[in-house]
Length: 312
Image (cartoon, rainbow, N blue to C red; front, side, top):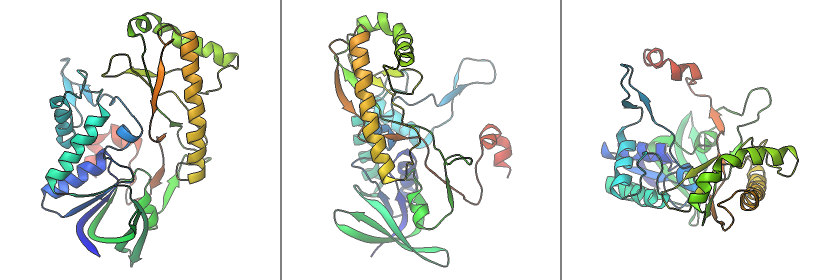
């Protein structure tokens, strides 16, 4: 059985940052990821662009005060150096991001493991003896001094028997899921003149029952490639993100919404007449999943009152 100082489950931004930080500190690290790349929702869910990660300075100057630096800044700089980051510092090229994270993981000396799921944990007196990872090689056991759950779904914590909640207290419902998609061959010059009509037309067709998607409007973003527009506009509700059957239904229902939205744009909005659907995200985007009941539960008030949180 291979032994590590640290095992990180989940190769999204938080898992990558944790693994790199530990490896730079001299630890032997295994980074487990269920997909075929690092980057989490930003690549597998096409969650693009980054939302603003800065605020304005408190002295009245219109100067950005960045809220996230460190390894994330290294990633931004790497994207910029590769010509894969927009001038707004938010729009990025996912394919280059995958390559960049691979290089950062390799440089740090981390052992990566793709297409792998944590499926079991052997526990004695509250201590993890080892975990089981399932992949093409079968079921493999690994052990470590420390473990980090960065799966987003709390998979490792759930395997260890930690208590958790799903959804809101009154009915267990989670936030909606979204399957992002992209359209190519959009006439951007014409679209610039017609874009203000998208949401009024969309709402009108919703009221008539022609559009079934329950989302209130159409959310789109420009990309780094001319003629390609990114959409974050499907909406799937009342599905459990840790139920394989619910997630399957969510993917199927969301794809129907993608084609409904594309047909609406082609038929009703100038600039999209010759557009083509070139991709949907490899997997549906999940906004809310298991919430682990740890030693301390972070609240919304904590995020606002940072000074109070740091003095606890």
